[in-house]
Length: 264
Image (cartoon, rainbow, N blue to C red):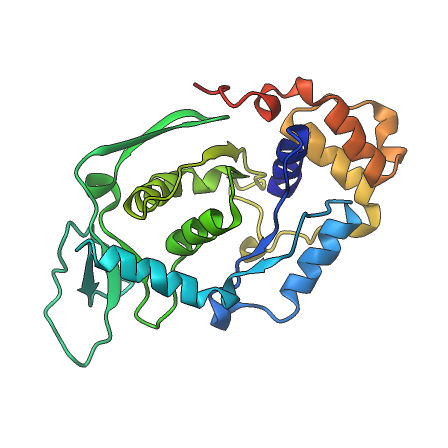
């Protein structure tokens, strides 16, 4: 869903649609998963611009960003276990133990971070009180999603991110990092999630069915309807290229695709 929404948003403004493979957590990467993603996108005629960016090849860039934040005096070591449920507020409560390899957290500020989402409207969060200091480098040496995506967005020249609403809560953390690193801030649109009968997001973790690429046209039309398009019945008999072309010609049906100020 996010792929279709972000593709249409980029193309409706004659922008570039970039593809990034977030494979930084190598121990959890399923062999062949990136190839499956590429085949799925091709089956729906979602063709990306430029080269694919693999996070697993960007470690040096993340190290450089972490070093820049360290020079600001914003980092500290934390030896709390991942199971420890607590909000960290500029210090680690765990005792110093040289036998335990620490994670690296960034100190947050006691102030509101506000941004305007193109779909959800205004969103505000006090990181120190509501989230606390968050991890940038895990104890196992793996950089976290929050730092990696911020560094990669800046590197790729991203001006707009369109993704699922489950990541809305992460956005203030990313804006905080953008400001710390003196990166430009970008626009966001968080799409509604496809939920199962139990009310949970459909995903591999809860055994959701795989995308049926053999019936690409039918699946694509369903995605457009979920996003809010009023599609003609006969559209499902068209090719995926024709379906996307129809959506772009009728993108005025979804105001947020064209208007950055929607949601203010």
